[in-house]
Length: 219
Image 1: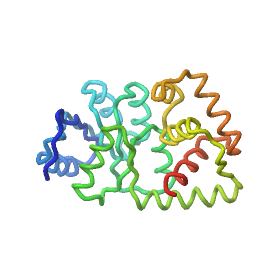
Image 2: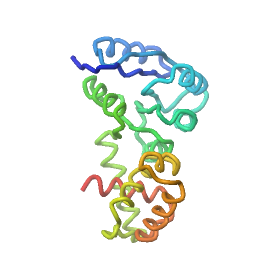
Image 3: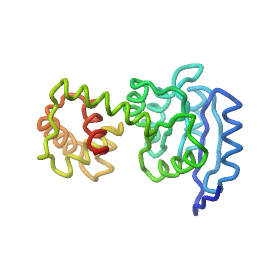
Image 4: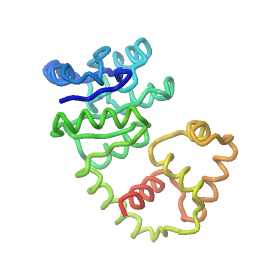
């Protein structure tokens, strides 16, 4: 497995199973593009170590002894917006996936993923991309589509390019402030784009924005 980066990705491992962390360490020892800077096994440790080590990417499990990774992700992302969180978990229920989207996570993978795909996902997340396990995405997309059909939520083609960009970032869990920074806009302008887009689509919730984003990105 050969991957090369000018500057290795600084990775923090968060999982309460020592055997899992050992397996991941063994995997990444062969990958020069990734450097493990630390480990954590609880929400408290994850928040503390992310502040101390400022990793580029955190590979995190959902279920932790003192809480869940979603809580940790939200707290970490609020304090350190530049740190990306990629969930690696055995849990794939729809509500859990949705909660990670709105915690500001950059990705969600199941532990069945092979090593090469995991490395590629970490590299993609480090570059600002979003990753969602294909099986999980298909199921969540189906759920969203049924909800949207039930609510008769239209997809209005009159959305401007900028409104689509704003909605896509909302769906990825970004706050209005993060969207403003990413698109070089003021907070007020972002709010205006959201208001206009939500009116066009008949939306009232950010979860509906995620539905729109997943449906449009898969078509």
